[in-house]
Amino acid sequence: MKVAQRMEKLPPYLFLELDRIIEQQRTLGHDVINLGIGDPDLATPDYVIDALQQAARDPMNHRYPNYLGSPAFRQSVAQWYHQRFEVDLDAMTETVGLIGSKEGIAHLTWAMAGPGDVVLVPDPSYPVYATQALLAGAQVFPMPLTAERDFLPNLDAIPEEIRSKATMLWINYPNNPTGAVAGPEFFSEAVRFCRKYDILLCSDLAYAEIGYDGFKASSVLEVPGAKDIAVEFYSLSKPFNMTGWRIAAAVGNPLAVGALGTLKSNLDSGAFTAVQQAAIVALSHNPTAFFEQQNRLYQTRRDIVVNTLEALGAKIPRIHSTFYVWFPTPKGLTSSDASRLLIEEANVVVSPGSAYGAHGEGWLRISLTCPTDRLAIAMQRISEAYAHVR
Image (cartoon, rainbow, N blue to C red; front, side, top):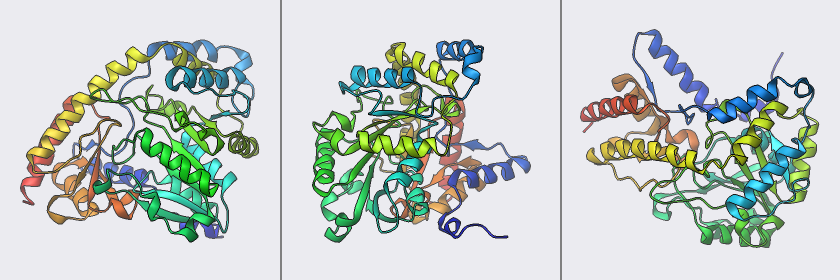
């Protein structure tokens, strides 16, 4: 017996490996603080939980859900986009419900790319963009994200022969893992580029509602004509602390949304209807005050991390969104060596930048999704560990 050859293209998934290391350290009796994974430690709002409990008691919701998301859920997503971004969507042709964005990202890639195609992927980036392109048989072309360019890709640097083969281009702002943000100028540039070369522009807007110092994220669909060539993923996971609920939507270009829906209908049966009904309540409950309260807490945590690292001499671009801090490794250590040092010397888990791509080498990522008191302890431990490598 053997696994399919395509599996040889896949590296071990980063967070599975981090889970293994954490369990190993805890087995040895160490108090490990995990700052590696971006999984909110805060609770889902009570009104959303109450809505789920009520919906779960309805026997009609115990049956197979709508493959593409219920009409009511898709309508709520369209209404939210109108309210939040002033973007108008046809709920039936320009939205599709997802069992979390990760599933949708994978299925869209399989629907829109194959052997002979090129998928343009930021480097560093969320690993799923690249791994799903590889599984689909497409070529991955990395677009370097560097501090010198504020972690924005240089579209002009993409060779002409690559542009002619490209079928998809991924962007993710606010950005994981760097925490960088992008404005209307870059989004307009990306839309023009993809329109010129007939490339599907794929925007992963997972961190849309996290913002500090007055920052508020935009949607690429706000660019006039963007729906001609763009699809965007909007997830409830991070803004509403619903990572385990697995509920999101893809919106935008009807051809791509339709292809995604067709593929999904052949592979899954849709999100649990009760979860969709709770998501409708989440989006329609005017969550602005909830977002603001949560962002104040994340900003406090961001400042704890940034102030500690800057005191250690690290140069960190100001983080205006996401709950990540992206910072250089100490004293020329590789990302893996620095990550291992912090686990062994400080019992603190951080993500090595190299896990997000070759251009992530020399960087580390800290997640702010840890209770504030524990985060402060972790940063003190990191300070002490850094003292040994100065």
